[in-house]
Image 1 (cartoon, helix red, strand yellow):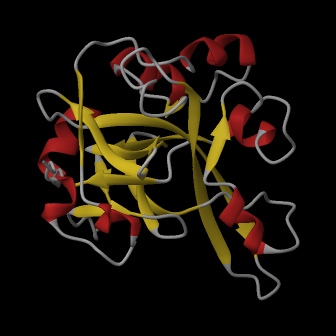
Image 2 (cartoon, rainbow, N blue to C red):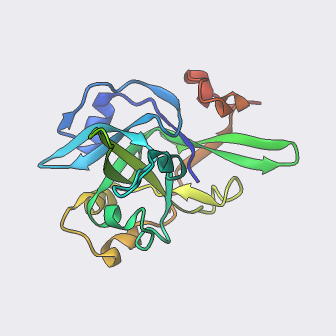
Length: 221
C-alpha cells in the first residue's frame, strides 16, 4: 500500500516536470502527508492544472463520507470492477506528484519505515483517481486515491505493494479524457521498471502524522 508520502519539490520543479499550465495557490513543502489531508493533484482540463483534493476517495454514491478513510489506495488489479473505483477509472483520472513515499518493512524488532525516492531526487508521478461527492448540505467535496500494484524487485524486500509510478508517456495516456477502455489503461498500472529508485530507513517518528519537518526523510543509522 501507500499510506504516507512526501512532496517537498516546489512549484517551478513541478511546473517543468509535469507541464502544468495553471496552479491553485497553497503548495508548501510536505514531509509526512497522511490520509484525509489535502494533497496536490494534476488534472487535464483545457491544459494541465494543479489543484488540492482530500486524500481518501469518497464515491459519488456514498451515504457516509467516512468511507473515504478506507479508500486511500485502489488496487490496480481490481479498479475496473470495484463499484467505488470503476466510474472514476473511466472518467476521473489524475496524477499525484510526490518527492517520494514511505513504506514499512516488517522485522523481528517491529515495523521499520523506509523512504523510497528517485536516485537523482526528481519528482515522481503517481497514478490516481478522483471523485466529487456532494454532502447533504450541498457542499462539494473532491477526493482522490493512489493506485497500487505489485512491488518491483527493488522494493519487494520492504513491502509486497507499491504505488504506480508513471513516466512522461504514461502520464499523457492516463490523463487523456478520450481513453476510457480498460484495455488501454490497465497496461500502465505495472510495477515501476526503472532501476533508479533508492531507499533508506528513517525514524519511526514518521509514524506520527503530526511529525512534519525535513528530518522525516533523513536516513537513520
